[in-house]
Amino acid sequence: MRTVAYYKGCLASLSAKELDTSTQALAPKVGLELVELEAVTCCGAGDIHEAEPDYYLHLNARILAYAEATGSDTLMTICNVCTLNLRQANHALRNDAELLARVNENLVTVGAPPYSGGVDVLHFLWLISAGEGYELLLEAAHKGLKGLKVAPFYGCQILRPSKLLGFEDPDRPESLERIIRACGGEAIDYPAKIKCCGFPIIQAREDVALAELIQPIEQAKEAGADAMVTPCPLCHLSLDAWQSKLRKQTGKDFQMPILHLSQLVGVAAGLDASELKFKRHVVSVAPVTEKLSV
Image 1 (tube, rainbow, N blue to C red):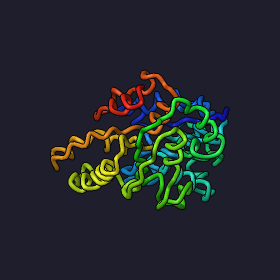
Image 2 (cartoon, rainbow, N blue to C red; image 1 turned 90 degrees about the vertical axis):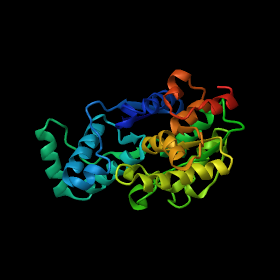
Image 3 (cartoon, helix red, strand yellow; image 1 turned 90 degrees about the horizontal axis):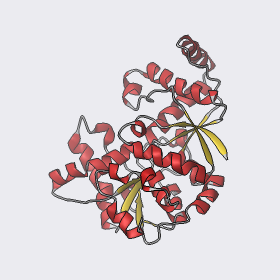
Image 4 (cartoon, rainbow, N blue to C red; image 1 turned 180 degrees about the vertical axis):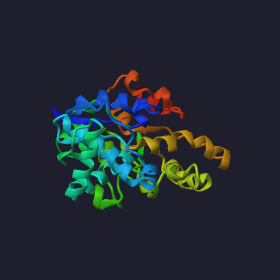
């Protein structure tokens, strides 16, 4: 069993609690012991990074410091945006001794532990799509997804910038497809799986955001997908909750079920309905559960 510090971020604590419950239930089945970080805040998303870069750096350094204090060398995330922000901050702190010293001085002042740079930030997707995690996934997915056609949606911030993320080819990723196939499902390929979901600009330019959003859903539907899966709760929110906005704008009612990564694997691993919490979704997941007789 691999012990990892677990940072669930904001959405899994609030509007996407089903992501947290399914992740916590699934983790032991894929060899992960989660040490949840309690005294941490939001990573700042992209907003604070743009407006107050030094404040953003301290927010993320504090999260990294508490992760390091657990004794683990790995901080596991379940959000693309959190992954990018934490890896950006980690890279900056590890490569600038003066910056690390200044940030640590401020952390200690507010009662947080100092950070030495000893933690790697890894998304849950990366931990179960390769190595021992993948081998345990193959064993855990005993119930399978036979007959289910699943369209993977990566989004942008788990792939780019590739120099900071670096897990796989940002133009030809394969980790989600690998997991879908390992669970017995059919992975549906389509061009828009690596596009932005539109979330970062929905407040400023809803028309532009929806023009981005419709592409993956429409392409997945045309390719015959029964459902889509994403490793990011912000992408999930866009793809699931905003289908109603697309219906009002375009007249197209896609009714495309959107699953969190941990839910999809959780179905294949036989997680209970109380752990999957599909009833929290906006678009019904009933077509998926009925097809699989969950």
